[in-house]
Length: 353
Image (cartoon, rainbow, N blue to C red; front, side, top):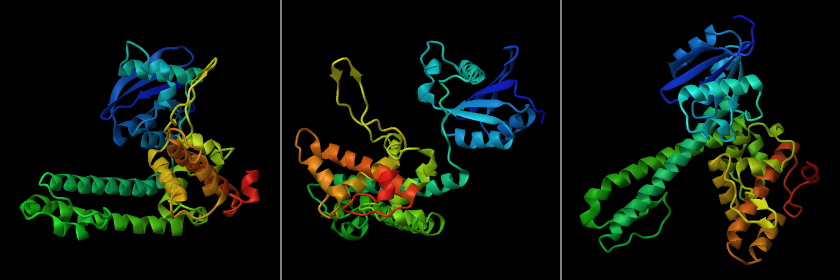
């Protein structure tokens, strides 16, 4: 491959076809300007033929494997945050060719709009897929259980209260006779879902025990179990990414948005940026910390005091605040190796971090 960096390639990624635009940084001329199938074969051939260059693309579902393909071919890659590229979507003339050209131009200028996104490694991504697949199975089970309860209500009956996991075993026998033909197959699907979820739980426990032993340290924090600790480690991947532990709260999206102008400073909801699954798991952990079964700790005392202030949505704000504290605390423990001390909230090494 020729050792040259005078070319910048902007790629507007699509589900089936991607537009590629080549820009000569010395002359400003546009060379390659074509569409290619979004496949490993087509893009791999492109990256192998072009000289060593800068490749710019937006972050999307396909960008992880495409960026790794380009890096393996020897190219420099920038995966840009699409929310920062206002120049692309804020226009009346938006099309694939223009988007690819704008990406190439931004790369040639090293524009400040090109805020890079860091993708996880292939191994981490595959391990995280186990956690995400489990979440999908749990979501499907919940929808089926709620649907079954709703159908039975139309007959003027109610199924007994039980957990979603035990529904197929405990509530199935109470289904009205006239609905057994309709809901019988659904009960069978629920049994299969339970088995699949248990299989994923075993794999999650194995990953935490054998591949990511730091999860055992994080599980010392009240409310943080195997699933939450593993999801946290896989989403963050490298604790050194953050200079300050408190930055993790913003990364996960549990900090409030700001809209301050002059004397106006409105209270807004959290940003909900970052990984939604990890955010939900941390919120669930926060509910446990503040709930009736939460262990006594400085974190619990602080959260309950915040909830006791009253006002509109005080409990919800307290839960989110505890989730934010958990995100920061877990990172500080991971980075320093310090253990959790309930009545201090965090060890001295963690406080220093």
